[in-house]
Length: 187
Image (cartoon, rainbow, N blue to C red; front, side):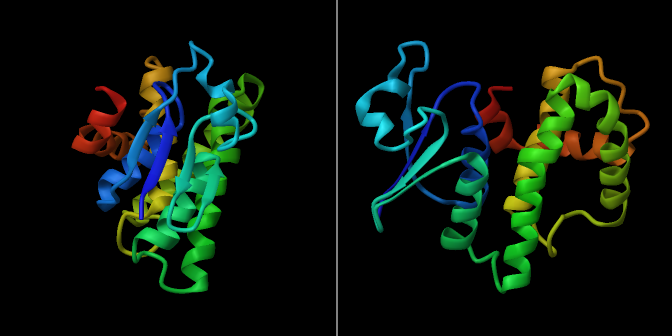
């Protein structure tokens, strides 16, 4: 049984790479050179017809999957023991979807950032003041997705003042000091 994770520098492949490193999931990494347009080669379009990264191929069942959130969810459900019941599955899915849609848009779409960023950050700060992990009592794919986006803040917005969100600052410090994260993000 072999997993193939397709990615490239500065793509969301960093999320499943970080998750796999934290959970000890082995895979073969396939670097797809976007500058050379390898993502548009017929062989890659068989994996992801949209030519985007990341993508995952699981030889054990022939599954080919794209979208970082879907990949995180698949790995969580099939390669770890963190999903113990339907409620846990739904909660992890909720946070992955939140990260890849609501949080990503609030961070990276300028018109939304001004309007949504303060409210989302205040709510996340409050949540993290009450608990260390988003789902259950250990780090899951939900934490990976949300922490990855929050970890992008100092990279993309180095002058963003986060002093109003001390729990987010603390979380970002833990994330950025994580050895797997540092290696994958090239920090």
